[in-house]
Length: 71
Image (cartoon, rainbow, N blue to C red; front, side, top):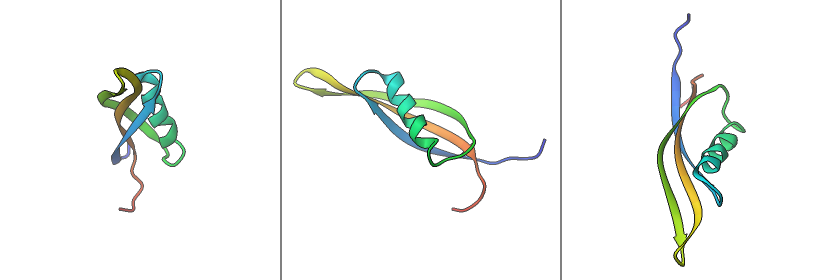
């Protein structure tokens, strides 16, 4: 197997419905500009509260993808 290098970026997805949908939103957006995504690791979850009610779920996700050069 050839040696590989992977880069990790951190994104925050949001959803009005759930943490799972927030994480899926982050991954879906990442796939629009990144290739060969390998791992998604949930590192933090929180909620936005307004007037005593949850209005948004937020999930911070670390995504790794094969590094092909650049910065």
